[in-house]
Image 1 (spheres, rainbow, N blue to C red):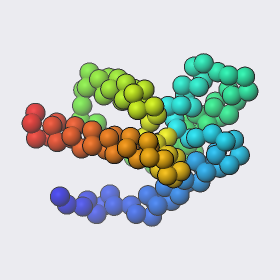
Image 2 (cartoon, one colour):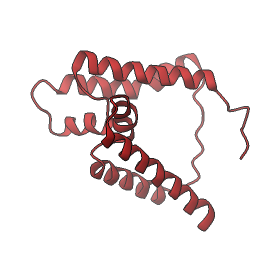
Image 3 (cartoon, rainbow, N blue to C red):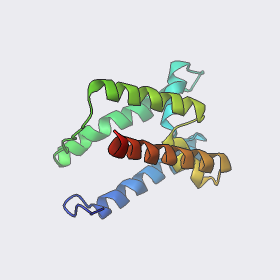
Length: 142
């Protein structure tokens, strides 16, 4: 394994991680909610009274952040080496895993681990193991 030093961005990564942590902490402190994207989006599908505005604002922030970033720098061009069917299958599997895991990687990995949740630790380890296994199978067996 080699590091692509041209794409190595420790300061940007650190800043991004700090922003994610600060946003998750602020949401818990001021709203008492966990910043798990699947839970926030799922809550918009069956909104409870008084829940829609903060959820919509959170999702709007996720969608507009790249636009704000584009005002400062050029957006990177992603290269996805998969066809549409593989992407759809991956999306469905992530959705199913999120339902069975009672949350997504952001909810368990960022928020759950920071609360020292054993359930989130086990779930995050399983998410990571599944990702490692998938990469191994796709790169070495197919």
